[in-house]
Amino acid sequence: MRKWPITMFTLWMIAGGTAWAAEAEKAASGDGLRAFTWLIVTAGFALAIAASIGAISQSRALVSACEGISRNPGSADAIRGLLILGLAFIESLVIYVLFVDILLLFGIGLAGRLPIGG
Image (tube, rainbow, N blue to C red):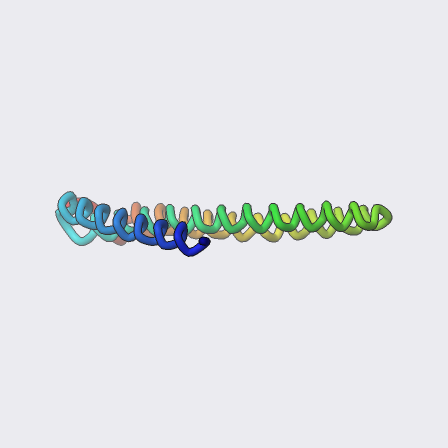
């Protein structure tokens, strides 16, 4: 039952990717513009994947902390401290991906290293 949504999502991503590739090929006049276009698409997907995995990880950590506090209310302070530390680490990974995306977009794409346009 679970394979059906995963299969449909995979087919949807493949179909969408080929449509974007065909559109980018028509619109691109040079290799630099095509590379910059795929740089933007890749950066967007990387940030979306990192944010979604980070959100899932944070929700699982919060659920586990709530269960731990409800089972042993005396250890609430220790669990709360470790939860905040863990959430900070998880969020820092998403911020690192955002930082790398910003470096790629503004450091490589707009600094003239890739020829943009024709």
